[in-house]
Image (tube, rainbow over all chains, first blue to last red; front, side, top):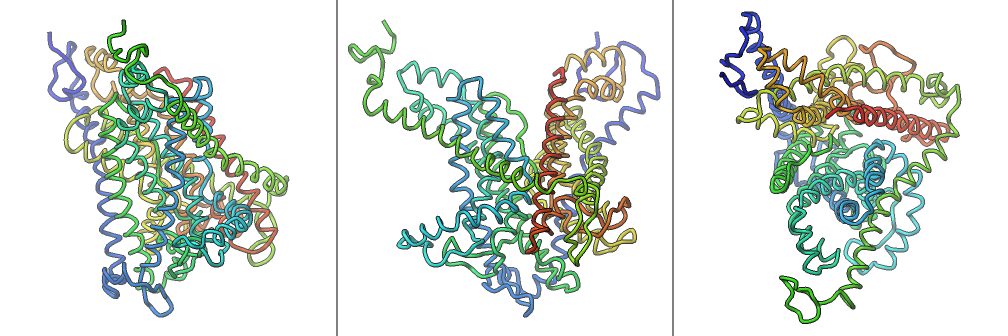
Length: 333
Length: 297
């Protein structure tokens, strides 16, 4: 009896005679689908080359190194040093991670290990609702609620803890901290969802064994669950980082858009993504200025590509240790 | 006797759970629960303020008039933005969903192994992380600057930017669902002599359909809330426009523009539009969940 397995594809004889048209149709079908897949690779490559090409006027005007590390962004004088933007992007992303990741991991641990079975699904849905709120709505809420309401608390903090580095002075309305806080809220659902996936792959044996040895719930989490899922959680945090770096609209609305490096976390700042959103209109007729924005886009593109590539690898490896993982949820920032 | 017991009287390998260990356990459990509560605070606050400030803006006129009045259009409602969002997201779905499903079919039916498929899979994963503003920038430089198809800014260009960011989400979710279709189903159909393409179209796709729809609707919901890619591609215009070849309003861009101006009426409209947008997205998500409930997989 001829065996027909799904992965043979070509050349398999089946029990019944095949019509000639079917024989012609199958390779065609396969090639059509493959072309679609190849199209995506071509698109990403095209993307990359095109952005480099368009960024070239600014990069040759300024030099790649000088573009990245010059501390002066001044389109009216045709000086495009993206350093304040790079710093702003990194500071806000760092604040987002420091606030968002512990909360996200705590949420994931609570939902998978501690919460009563009945409330798990509702909690998961509630946390995912955070991802359903669009970026611009977070921005709106940030401007009209968060900034005015938090300002007194921030000023108090700045006055009281002025001995700490990067804290003190006068609190600006829009600032790095508010932007980081909003980013923390925005990355929370994805970091939590992926952490949950990773944590759920920890073998039951391992957890039961630690409990049987007399460990408390927390000791089980600390000694069995966390070590096992560490690399996966790291990957989840990095995916959050990738998203925080690329997030545009909410940050643009609450960071103040000031192209100088703030000295404390309650100062105004700017990010790479925000500068693109703000200046593309006026830059359209100036090749160098537009090029500088494309270069900023290129930096974002490369940065998120690297971070996401690495993060996915970590999550995948963590997941393949356990049972099969579902798709990594998520989407473009 | 317990096999692991070595502590006399304890019956366990570890010291009895008392004192410090017990306190640590309770404290840490409390912290994890507190973390979960903290995560939900912003959700409650955002929903509260959306309802509190948004509902006040809602009225019949709000949904049936276009922005008019002063130079920024501080009178009128969100009709054009609402319609524009729906139109552009529909077109984006028509582009992204067939391609996404096609690529997912390739990955599952023909590309479970092999380097090419692995490369495609990897880049689709990576593409989900590309910031949406970069997609917007890309469409801006390729289609808008070139002034393709008459108007430089156009609704269809916005749709393509949205489609680009929907594509990886659609593909990944479709791949997961297609993998759930049991192999014996495929084998049975193939063993009856059915050609491969028919097996895929008549057996695999229908079986996976509810799941495919769920994943795609979640991508639609995500696209509906995107501002950055539309900012440079469809921008904003005065008046309702059904022509995807011209500039087109959308809810996110309308909100963004209104927020940027220090005018109470515009801010009020922004809150109303934000509430509308969130309701729209939640409805789509809800439909997606209902679709997945009907899934046989």
